Image 1 (cartoon, helix red, strand yellow):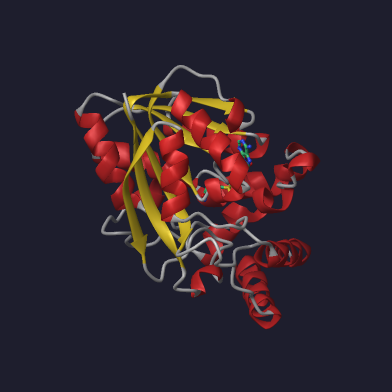
Image 2 (cartoon, rainbow, N blue to C red):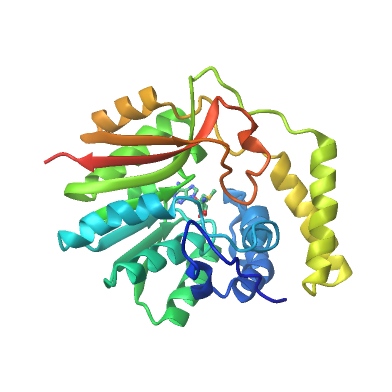
Amino acid sequence: MTNNIPETQEGFKFPALIEPLDLLARFSWSWAPLLCRSQHGCQEYHRCWSLVRLIKKEGALPAGLEFFKHHLTDLVDQGRTRVLISGAADTGLLALVCTIFSIVNAKPEILLMDRCRTTLIQNRILAEYLGLEIETIEGDIRKVDIEPVDAIIAHSFLTFFVKADRQDVINAWASILNPGGKILMSANIATSEAVKSPAISDSRIQKAKQELIIAAAALGMNDSESQALGKIAAHNWQKKWAYDPYLTVENLNSAFSLAGISLDEVTLKENEHLGPFAQFKNVSKKIQRGEIAGTRLA
Ligand SMILES: C[S@@+](CC[C@H](N)C(=O)[O-])C[C@H]1O[C@@H](n2cnc3c(N)ncnc32)[C@H](O)[C@@H]1O
């Protein structure tokens, strides 16, 4: 397989260059069946997330580079560089954070917490390749117990939890944030809690599956691998990627405030998609990608 590096991404020419995604995708494709734990139900998406990102999104980094850069630059200016990445389907978020720190020419202290070994090991491989020391923590974010950090970065993570559990996640984040520290998130936001995920037609999924199989073969996957990838990706496209009720500005604001976090910014982005398996989802104007910043009150 070869890495298909996009020419530009939000104005920058080089971000994806730091991530040898073809090799990292190979790692998770081969090792997720051995490393993901069945009780987490994550094997299918950890196995093919990087491959689908490589093939369908040309290796694009997770959305929001300018937003994260803006806030991380402010923190770097204050000498705050200790950052926790909370949840990572693959190495995309680490690559995004490293790209930003390289643009602002600062050395980060990065911690990455996820409950699954596949993504933790995949991220350690990328860090090793970049010559960067990172601390990976395996476990449930709601039980996080680390020295305080200056920023928490979460991408499409909170929507993974039912509403009651989201409060526990936000409380846990608040408990390890330095006063003045930031929660920086990209997540789908609905106009109201009544909004449901739009249904996806089977014909669209079948079309995307066939395109993926052809592209995977062109990248050098053999017939049985590319067929298996198509089948697993189709399952992922059929899956519901967020729990109802969705995040809304109102429920996020009240959850943040209960945890002692002020909600400073919610910027909704029109007509954008989230990760590799969200490409059909944001067809509704009632659900949009939100860039969200909150500050830990003193
Ligand atoms: C959908 S992914 C995040 C996707 C993100 N867009 C990205 O690009 O990395 C969700 C991640 O959260 C992790 N996760 C789910 N529940 C968790 C929990 N309770 N504690 C820690 N990690 C969790 C999963 O293992 C997975 O890697």
